[in-house]
Each structure stands twice: as C-alpha cells, then as structure tokens.
Amino acid sequence: MRVDVVTVFPEYLAPLGLSLLGRAQRLGLLAVHVHDLRGWAPDRHRTVDDTPAGGGAGMVMLPEPWGRALDAVLVGEGPDGAVGERPPAAGPTAPLLLVPSPSGTPLTQAWAHELAAEPRLVLACGRYEGIDERVLDDAASRYRVEPFSLGDYVLNGGEVAALALVEAVGRLLPGVVGNPASLEEESHEQGLLEHPVYTRPARWRGLDVPAVLSSGHHAEVARWRREQGLRRTARRRPDLLRALLDADPTALSADD
Ligand SMILES: Nc1ncccc1[N+](=O)[O-]
Image (cartoon, rainbow, N blue to C red):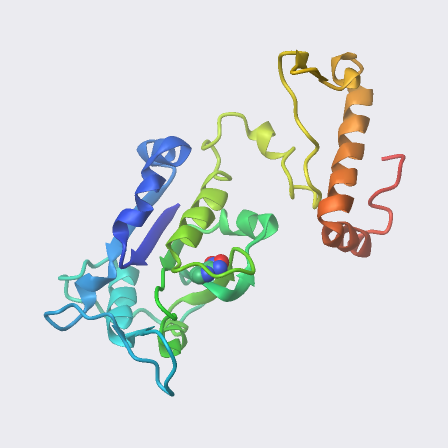
C-alpha cells in the first residue's frame, strides 16, 4: 500500500517510521510519502491560509496550494515537478482522498478493514479552521473524497488523525503484525469490547489472576472471556451492544 500525506507539519508524521509501521516500510509492505504543502504555495512567502469568507475567528487554508498539491501528488510529481495532465474523472479505481475533520465520518474498525484493501490512500491534513471547501469539491473530479473523524472532539489539525488512521489500517496489512491471530481477538473486531487481560505473576499486590484462566479448561476460558467482553461492552459502550443486537437479535445467544 502507498500512502501520501500532505501537511504543513511533515515532521509530525515521523512516528510512522518507527516500530511495526517502520518495519512494514522497510519490508516494502507499506510506502509512506509525506509532502510539505508549503512546497506548492505560489507566493514567495509560501502562504497557505487567509481570513474566513463571511468573517469569524481563525484562518482558512487557501485553495490554490492544495489544488496544486493534490494534482501533483496524484500524478506523482513533487512541488517543483511540472504537474502532469489531470487524470480522467474519479471512478471506483480513483485514489481515495481521506480528509481528517471533526465533521468527518467516524473511523471504525470495519472501515479500517475496507481501507486496508485499497492500493493507495492520500491524506490531506488541514490546520487552522480547515481547508476551503472548494478544494474537496474540485478534488472529487479525480479522487474519491472521504472526510473522516477519530471522534467528537477537536484537534488542532489533521496530523494526529492521519497517524491514527495509517496505524489502524497499516497494522491490518498482511505481514505487518507478527501473528495475524492477534488481530482477531481485539476490541471492535466482533463489534464488542475485548475482555480484560492478565499475565504473570499469579498474585500481584494482593490481586489474583482470575482462577478460570489458570484452569486449563479452554472452553471455560473462552466462555469467561466472552462474558467479560459483553459485561465491559454493556458498561462502557451500550451503543455497540444495541447496534450488534439490531444487526442480529441472536448475536448474544448463549449457545454460540
Ligand atoms: N477531531 C478532529 N479535529 C481536528 C481535525 C481532525 C479531527 N479528526 O478526528 O479527524
């Protein structure tokens, strides 16, 4: 998978070179290209923002640098490369342009799995009050455009969300995590939260590992883990439980 990230803070994306994703890049499973938006700002001050139309506080990112950047990234040109001919209109095989935004579609594990099947993702990280909307309208002629959100809170820009998305998607790529089985038991994989986990020692500060986990009865351990996951989901995320039951009223039946 190739991932292009356009940002005014390229150094913010440095952590993608660490740990599992760094190894994935060295193995050629993932290629991350980070581009500095200021490279496409037409003026010598490399201006990327201006005051909001209609007034209001803060600044909005100018369309021209973004238009140039997204044209160039699409055809693989750098800031100084002559921008090639615009590709044909966006179709199902057009690259996906993901735009971190508090007003985006919530990123979920199910969506992350879909994104992991894409050959290429382009991430446009906005700052300030956001990007001039015409950038997304114009990009729709040659990208599939999908604003996404990590959650209902506001960050100062899209870079943290880009890091999160690339990690959530990158770790699902074949060969990235050592043991693919470890991906199955995680929270949200079956629409529920994961059960609590324990390791050695058996007693720690007067607290014991639940006896069932040392019983050697695999069926009992599996049952206990599922029950604990359901309890945790009911307590912390009743919305997930409701969604699961709406989708399949028998989802929590005891005999499965
Ligand atoms: N929550 C956010 N705030 C600012 C930019 C992006 C965001 N997000 O969740 O993708």
